[in-house]
Amino acid sequence: MEILKTVVIALVIAILLRIFLFQPFTIPSASMEPNLYEGDYIVVSKWTYGYSKHAIPYSPPLFEGRIMNNAPERGDIVVFKLPRDNKTDYIKRVIGLPGDRVQMINNVLHINGTAVEDVLISSSEVSEMFDGQTATQLRETLPGGRTFTIQDFGPNYSLDNTPVFEVPEGYYFMMGDNRDNSIDSREQSAMGVGLVPEENLIGKAEMILFSWHEGASLWNPVSWFSKVRLDRFFTVLK
Image (cartoon, rainbow, N blue to C red; front, side, top):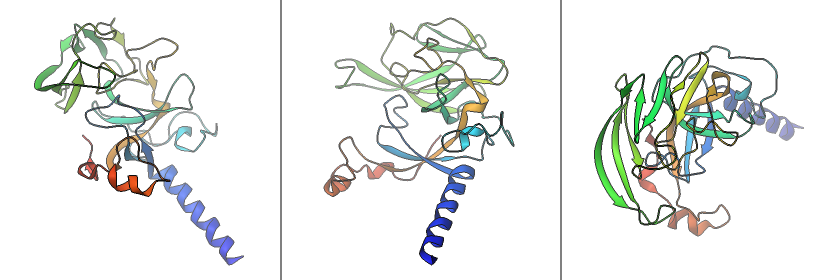
């Protein structure tokens, strides 16, 4: 009975920590490169934006809206529930706030009619899904001064020119940092992300705890060392 009691207490503490403080999250795709890579294991703060039903595992319908609501800032990296199913966890960057007008024009992000400043950092050829294309990294500065690196594969991709998206109250416009390899709020179809309700926000991505290259496996201890990305451990996210 004492062992059972200890296990139950430990589980309750773990669940409370996950609901109210931190949630681990594994990056499943390349949509946030060059800042987050597939295989990064990050920690998300749950208290930053307050709490909705999505703060609780399996999103039980206990209440509507948010408790202790605190709006995200433009440029935050956010984990949220995909609006079309309210089940799938997604991670993107907040680009448009309520009341904003967001548009892509000739591969340049515009917010409220003004082009966002991009400064070229580097260019390199990639060998995966964009074989033979040149990946360009740019330093982007959003209104308000938030600066971070994005990745782009040049003009003429499907989301390089969009209509104007008007962000209503209570919603946010999300984009991936890997601009030509991200399904995000620019995609408004049934298979896209669309605008994200504030209720769907889970938390703010704070830090990369650990990171492994593709092919690492829990059941293959050798891969823990051969596939590790030590230079990404404990990286604070911007």
